[in-house]
Length: 459
Image (cartoon, rainbow, N blue to C red; front, side):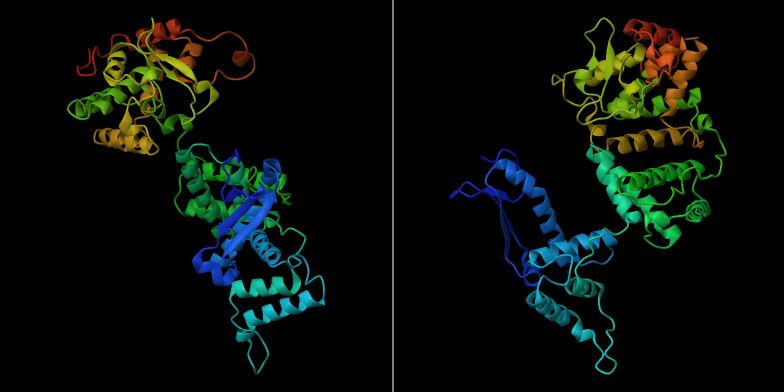
């Protein structure tokens, strides 16, 4: 029995062999010349697994060539599709033909594709579509054995395949971010240039184009980091030559420091959001309160499950750890954060009457697009009270940091509560973790009786 679920593979009941069987879409039957792809992959599951990948990829290339042609492909992608086409026809993929008979039929097939574009007076071929021209060329001479140089698009495609985020939501955002970076680079250099031919001048053109577009220095820096990483991987894994022109590229300096990009919320703004949420959806008020009383990230609180809000412990707390459907920012982000004061009351309200430990504590904001919904919901309340773009819901982490500093909380305890790195060297390697009791006492001291309940005013 086929133990591993693989597309288009079935066991032949007559002999027990593993067979790849796939129908050709109706719209492509004429161009492919087949109604079905059928091939025996092996007599055993292991043999079939070994053969499957290469054969399946070949069929994918054939279908893609028939459906989309070669327009817009990189040289590497074009070569893969044309090679798959020649192999399907039983032809020599890297030459003009193994014998005179093959060379003859390949020449005739190429002529059928392009003869209609030949000028009878000059004998020249004019206006041959890219698809027909590429196929005719492959028929007449085959596809070069030498792999084409990887281009910008090849580099991005490979990087994404090797470094794709595991979670669908994160992967979607990663794909969108890299697609933008790829588009901007190609626009700056004017073509899908081979990676080995990229120069420092190309990198400066990209930088100047992004600056002229009015992008913030931090945005340009993030995109430059992506470009640098993509090209570095292409050079090491795809054997792309040349330099990495983005390494060490000077960028415009930010007008404000990283520390100033986000600042603590003024007390009247924090109170104003409490007031705005007091007569609206309870889950938003609970989340705002938990952010205020734990110093956690919005992404951490909104993805809590009921079982991760631990109320039956001597020190009630939330559990922040990675799961199959959630990653954390850094390894240091894995932690237990005590619940005190109004934060504890908000947590109790969130799980009241829910018995399933795997159920989301905040279902509206739990899913793939939940962070965007939460950010819009809370940011709109903040923005109604302050027009300073540095004031955002995330700023509550800065408020907590300010409170702990003012209360002279030991720095390692501050980091343990907020999930910050302990630094490098001996600081990170020595000593045990900060206990829940220590973190609870630190929060109680830092909060100092702040807000008895999420529905009451400041004490």
